Amino acid sequence: MQPLAILRKWGMRTLIVVCFVVMTLLLYPTLGQAQLRSRNEASLGMTDNANLEQTEEDSDFFLSLSSSNTYKEQKHLFGLRLGYVDYMNENINDAFSWRLSDRWQNSTHSWAFTGALLGQKFTSSEPGITESAFDFIGWDFNAEREHDLNPRSKLNFGPGLSGRYYTGALTRSDHTLYGFIGIEHEATSRLLFGGRAELGFLGSSESEFSRRYLDLSANASVDLNSGWIWYNEVGLRQSYFTDRTASNDTIVGRLRGSRSAIGQRTDMERYSYVYLYTDATRKLAEDIDGGVSFRHSSQTSRSGFQDYSANELLAHASLTF
Image (cartoon, rainbow, N blue to C red; front, top):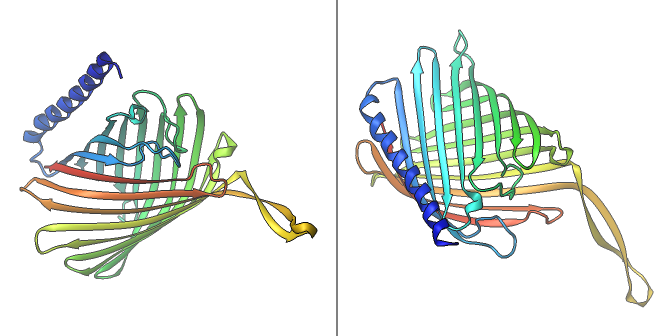
């Protein structure tokens, strides 16, 4: 990278960090009211596979900044989340993200509804390393109902609908219809368990992106005596692409002269994505906490087209008020 390009890039990084700090300092005196809350987090991390490649993996450091703000007004809970990720070398992955939301309940408080507008913009060019690693704007809507199973356990479930409209080099629109169910259980005052399942179908204007999927996840949170909170989560996603196929050659028999008889089998393309996440956080002051986290993710497919494995290690600090 040329010196001028390095100067420009670090100039942008400095400007973003300064804006983040200034916004936090300006908001801090006004957020003593009960209806207004803000959580601002900065993370420094490293990954061993920034571009999610199967071979020739590129490790890199990255900076992540986020600000999550909520404001309660009568029956509505408004939210605004801003995020920025900046990679040291693999600048193609640098991106801004935003989400504007509203959550409210019906008159009997039996259902909660959430609507959101959101977007993602890569600052350099679109990496395209996953199905969604492109510039987009979109919306989400879901309805959720909670049911107490017993004093320590509760169930939540409901339907959802979302849309994504990709605005960069790849112009396409995706719409997803899904249903979900989750459970939370308080084993003790210091130990919490949870789980979630989601089943959905994504229809795309580019048929090769259409798919049905199943998400499963489980988590556990432990409040340690030393003041640390240890959170763990494991998840699995199975995606079946309705307009993609993967062909595999299989030995089905032996002919004379030790030659193999080859049969070809064509199946629907399938991605299997697995992740493991663990985080340890400690309260450092009344409004400040910090900690470290680790995430491992891997994906395999029938075609082998987007197989990869990646590990991330982060140190993070947050200010909440």
